[in-house]
Length: 332
Image 1 (cartoon, rainbow, N blue to C red):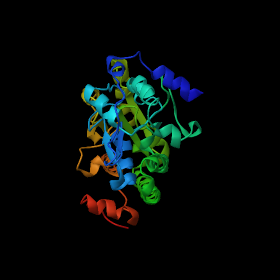
Image 2: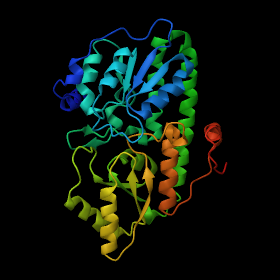
Image 3: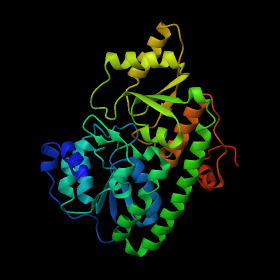
Image 4: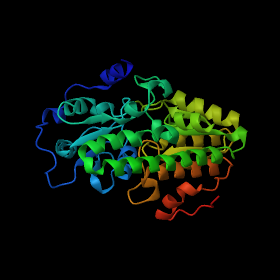
C-alpha cells in the first residue's frame, strides 16, 4: 500500500513521450531477448546474471542523475523494442513513472528493488519520497536483486535458466565478500573522523551498513537545490567536527561542495576534497568503476583513504573481478 502511494506521488501527468508509445513488436524470434534497465547498477547485475543469453541495454549512462531523468525519443524506441524492462523503483525514476506504468500493461516491467528488498529494511525519507531509494549502497541488500533479475530473465530465455541461477548465486557470493571488505576497510578510519560529507544524501545505506556517519548538503532528491542555510550548516559541522575531507559526486554539480571548502577556509580551517564518488550512476563503461562491484570498491578506497584509514586486503572471492579489471590491491 505504501509503495503504491509512493509510485502515485512520483507519477507525472502524461507527457508527449508517453503519448507516442505505439507498442511495436519486441525482439525478432532469432535474436537474443532484449532487456532494458534504467540504471547502470541494475544493468550490470542483469548482464552478469544473463550472460550471452540476453541483450541488456541501459537508459542512464555515467554522470546521469536518475532523479531528474526524462525519457527521450530514443529511449521510447528502446523501451518499445524491449522484451522486458528492469527499473530500480522506490520512486528513484520518478519522472519515468507514467511511461513505466504504461509499459507494464504490455510487457514484464519489474521494479527490482521493491521485489527484492522489503519495506522493513529500507530507510525512511522525506521530500515526497517516503523511502530512500539508494539501496545499492549496501552490497548485502543489493545482492538480493540478482535472483530476482535471474527469475525475470529466465522467463525470456528458459533454456538458460539453470545457468542464470548459478551465475546469480556466484555473484551473490562475490557481493557478500565485497560487503565484508567494505566493513573492514571503513573500520580502519579513526573513529572521530568516521563522517562522510557529500553533495546529496545518497549514502544512507552505506553509512548504516558500514558504520560511518553520513551527512549530505542536499536531501535524498536532487530536484531542489541546496540553499545558503544548507551550506552554512554544513560549514559549521565541518569546522566543529574537524572533518578532514568532503566529497563531490559524479552526478551532482560540485559547486555546493566547493562552496563549503571555500567557506571553511574563510573560517581559518582547511578541508580537502577527498575525491569524486559514484552515487546515482556507475563510472565510465569499460572501466572497473563501470561495474557495480567497482563502483563500491572505488568509493570505499576514496572514502577510507581521505578520512585517514587504509583499505583492507581484497578477499579471495574478489580476485577474479580484480584480475579482470587489472585492479592492484593487496590480497589476504
